[in-house]
Length: 409
Ligand SMILES: [Fe+2]
Ligand SMILES: [Fe+2]
Ligand SMILES: [Fe+2]
Ligand SMILES: [Fe+2]
Image: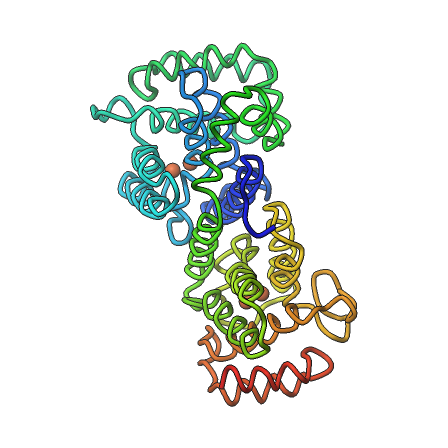
């Protein structure tokens, strides 16, 4: 599937990217000293809670849809370099502003960026705050109050008490009332406790109200086609690359080099576009790798190597869940697999390594070798190609190395 047109596919795609974002934010939180397990999606929870509150407050159709997206992506500006952002007002402003700027290029960008700009505002700021931001502000704090553990009956009462007590100060009164209403629904808490929120979100947005679903479909057809996927891919390539000081343009360069090789082979326009997309997203799972490992100056220990090696596993899972075509998923996530079957993370046999996968491996190695790393300067293109050639048969495909020599030198 290259183009996406139904509401359900759009939601699955953006949800998967929000999971990638959550993996990156967990790294930030781990660096702050919190003990947080991978998979405790803050964005997913804020997206779900916001959507439920928004519905009670009368938001419908496209507004509810955009609110859910703004909730999923509200901390997108906090990826990379904002280890202390919560509790520090300047950095709270900074990540809100940066996130709003990133999302302003998306379909519905005006609405999304307004909701994200003000997502840490409270009534005490004495400003006119748009209702979506008021909702996300409470949803964000609610998720933090729940401390990512099972909310018992007593926890719920304590949280509600706290919210109603501080309505008008920390929480906007209308949204606080909506939470009181929502809290009466047992399933709301049970879904949050269980943590699997995509299916209930899909059920809520797509399957309940036929009339509203019709409106989503119109929006999705109009606004969330090819351009939306391109925007997501460009944005996440940028986030991956800025995570480490040494990978400034890595994803974008891999995409360009893979594209150049595919062109050299005479591939058609659609396939060339797809391999570029796969290149942009090949290291998506690196968002889950702590920055201190990515930037480590010395050699990595055994455990750090294992952690780095998880990245293509996450790339594979995230892109599969996002509904990308199988060839795109494989081209992106098999770039550390090897012709001798000793690669990672799947140990894919040589017979399953298609031309696109083999192109990506060469594009990735070539790009990495020509870039600076903490422990060495970038090599010349000729030297890089010489090293790649020495891996013919074990790592890389002989004919494709010749293609790379023509396309990249
Ligand atoms: Fe935030
Ligand atoms: Fe947040
Ligand atoms: Fe990689
Ligand atoms: Fe890479």
